Image (tube, rainbow, N blue to C red):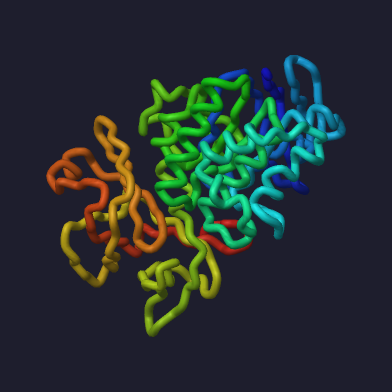
Length: 354
């Protein structure tokens, strides 16, 4: 199925969410959308999946114009949400639910094949509400595949997943692309996943396509948004103590910030301003947080290193410093945040506070 859209725009009130988006992709191809939180990735995917109407613009399946009122076109699409939504029923009942609604013939061999490849065949009698996050995501994907989609849309399919589930889903998606006539669209924050899947990669920022590349050509230099990645933005509580303010991070640790804001807010920790240390080094200007290296993306001059500090965040490290420290996945290090480098935003609209 060839999917194309032209001049897609989306507005909520006076706010522009998407601005003049045009793209195309086809069978046995994976189109990857990347960009920071708020760039419009999920909004665009929902429009392309015919779940939402755009304010303006057109969508085509094999050069035939379609929209949300086109039932047959909607049935050609399957959407896997970032946060799994499952029925309070058995795993098997969830998996076959969408297919039954579409009057698709259900064959036991197909169910066995799909659930086996996704590693959930032993869970079929379990209540779906009792599953882990990774298991729920695999059930959602199985549910989508049983609907026999021509277009499969995956919104952040690897977000907050355990390594085991991630590897299973990676293999499944690649197998689906190579052996089925399926058009696949997915969004991700991970540069490594873009390098695995991105037959075409579109970079969104503030509702616009700002760059286009492929998995062969992708580089850290492509992505200005890596200076401001979505997962380095956190909802925190800001409190004041004596003459300074501090933010309580998702892991409960306090770090000093320069702001007039109090209460619930968002902070952005620039990855290039996070200092990575081999040993703890407290100082008046920052706070050290113990962390573990999860993922490393190597480039010529910069290294994108994903850390687990009780929450996930990215750091950018010069190649020379990286090599001198002998960093590797699993290594424990300390992260130091300088208070004057942390940006604070109001909770409602991310308006920056100075």
